[in-house]
Image (cartoon, rainbow, N blue to C red; front, top):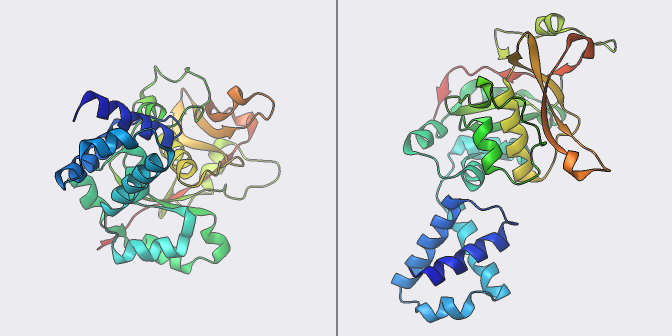
Length: 281
């Protein structure tokens, strides 16, 4: 493929994704064009069409359909998507924003813990709105900041020298609350909050896991979890790291995902995630 065509493809991609460059999507777009060329479509078709709004829109649509066709969801995944609607983030959503999964990651994604599906089926419609089922690739906060769109994170760097900024997890399905658990009006300190958690079946997610949920949910639905101000199991010195989506209606630059050490006197909220049990195909 010529440098001219590469340049045009990048322009098309930038126009179709609001300026968020991502090399893996450009690579897929290039593969799609090469397949069309191998099928007999002449080069002049792309040279004449590049820059035309309708052509750019058509090519971007072909790419989006190609991305979503790369993974066939299992029966269980389809059932979960039907039950949770926009609160289900599977492989198509993850690959669309974070890049193509490895064969090992896809193999893990093929199965969802049985108790997750059982729990979702037992929930009322209102309870399902409070939970998100997502495939978590385990990507670090550092990489998420690089891949996510601009203004997704608040401009802060105090945590970049601490290990949790670069921590990664094993890929897995995660059933996680998107709303805080109920606490008394006066609030609870960290130790008191931990006693509310049934550690046999659930756990307090880390800062990385909460940030991943907020980023993926926003990129997929454009919904910011503004009401979520949650402590996490990640500790900075002796304080749990607080994660929330800061919104400043007056200063846009002060809006984004924020992380700060949560002192006990601040009495912040808490969310939990379900522990997996037996896994079924």
